[in-house]
Length: 122
Image 1 (tube, rainbow, N blue to C red):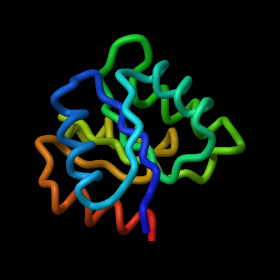
Image 2: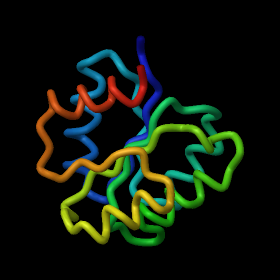
Image 3: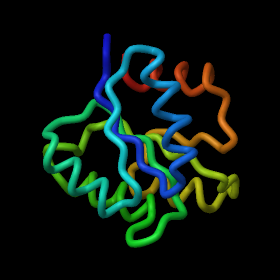
């Protein structure tokens, strides 16, 4: 089943890698460069099946984005994966507390990313 995925990262290279991995598995990808960009694209595109976001970004970081998405009734149950260089347990706990579904540490393995996507979006 093709999913509609919002990929959020301030690094164009990382967005390209995530998008390529997801598109090669047949998914549709909307890219955003930070949390603010992601929110405007999310509101404009209707429903998405999954959000994958970085943590450290300008304008609005990933954890603030997760919090905003969870506050919106339309997207309250949308799975959100955090894809970040942050491996700190306290940061992961903070992510869980604001509503992140899962946490993947960069650099990511494309096959593992697709396995996690399949797991959170059965």
